[in-house]
Image (cartoon, rainbow, N blue to C red; front, side, top):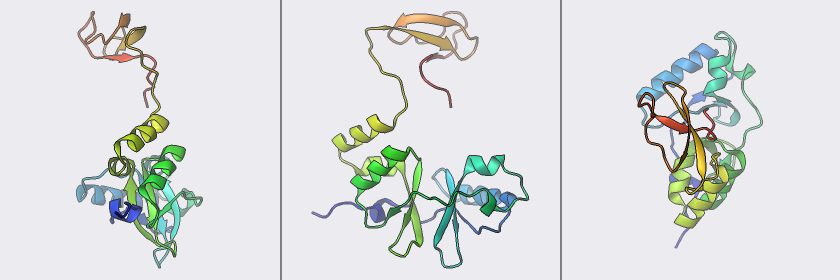
Length: 184
């Protein structure tokens, strides 16, 4: 039985830019690619004329950059990537370590061939490996259903203490969130 590799689970249509393109042009490329894709664009990748991976830029970085600035000026050139031959277990460990939503996949010549999304890697792992990766990567609060916890209403801000899940806000009927869970 052969093991699953990054090549087996990659999306062959990463969002790519030339380092000289403007930030506005890069955002337009993302808009166009999002219309043709079912996946979410988290990062764009800067490649040279031969397709060699030179850098990565997050959507957030693009949105915060001046529109006329070249993409190369906001790109990170220290890219964490995986190779096509890397096992899905290795890819899962890279996701666990760096907590990215996607990783570029390169061939032996560092040519960008695609991108692996975290959900695809977790899905490709067996059940125990998936649990291990999720435990290492999810930034959440410890959960003990028998302990009283503090909840806050998204609508009116009411704070309440409960054991278990409160359901809706006792004051306005709005949705409640656990106060220990970060809002990103």
